[in-house]
Image (cartoon, rainbow, N blue to C red):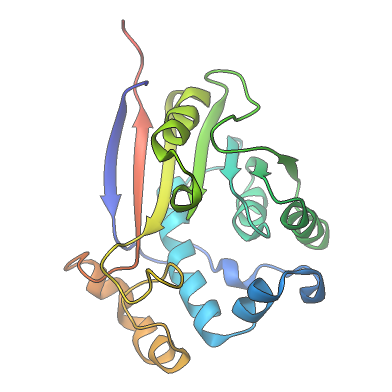
Length: 218
């Protein structure tokens, strides 16, 4: 596997509010996504997670970015609107269609193709950034998926992975931050979440890692 230099960050200052990105027709989304996107809990939690991911990927203008396991396309659309050349990969055709709808509705230039994290349809060393958010927890062999993501990155390219924290009330439900998974807690504690992240990762349900691919001198 190509060498990766990494740094982990539990929180970051706001860069953009992806929760404000234009939504695809909510009726076209699976019920779980629809309920999440329309709740205070989902809106606040997504904003905090997304600020962290955008900080770790920035700047993306003019770069070739791959979004692995793209879901309904919120992240990929935001990256495209920041000037990235974005491709989203997912195994679920219904989510690919939802992502395409979102991109059209947002006038964002993003491409979506069917594929898996363990067999990415890209040549070696052709991408600048690869992002995988809450994907590895669903992959039987996470190590092979990470190796595959590293394979398609160019030397100096960046891999950003966001995953669920193991010791949290959220691990049985969804990735989030420090507050318990309820609307009231999100409204009250969401504004101070980034301050908690500067002190500790203990209790965080969403933690992100950024790794830069080193040149292979072998």
